[in-house]
Image (cartoon, rainbow, N blue to C red; front, side, top):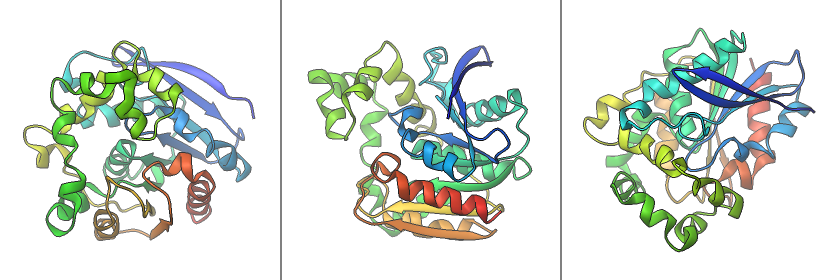
Length: 274
């Protein structure tokens, strides 16, 4: 189906938004994570259209070239969630599913918990509820898996990640096109500022998230090297509505790209359960 590429202005910034799918279908807003943009959903979106869903894929703050503010504080969670609400408001979308992977999952949990009147359901991929992640730091191996965050917040993180033409990024599993996008001026800094804004200082307060009361699906892939099983399994403690937990076998962190059929199936299933 034809995709409508929009530029939506909010908070003095310009966001690239990609709208497609059946005109009268229920809406799923798709939120990517670090360090990729909305292209991570490219293989998922056509499958959602086949299921009757309309999709809104947003290149979020730091990823849209026109939305890369300099100040680290401009990447705080309230800014990130506010961007999504503003885009949906501009599009006159009163209700939608919210789907997020990686950092997009954190944003999605917060949106669902704090705006239950705006979202019909939540699908979180890889990233558990922030309180479950907190619990997993003491109850599992998540502390070791999250150790990379310590150097992501350092001032020289950009230099380390882009050394040798982005060899470290390539080890993460990124494609040449994705790496090229990150080498554009300000692109990688924008993504890293999500970590700097929210994983420094009083982290517990910054990430604090109420329980989610709308229907929720947690999708986790069992070869994920950075987000472990414990934080995924414990998320059910903080989902008070209808809850589904699904494991994708044999797939690493990049579930939308590596297992698009499975991801799309879980999103479509959650939509049909509403």
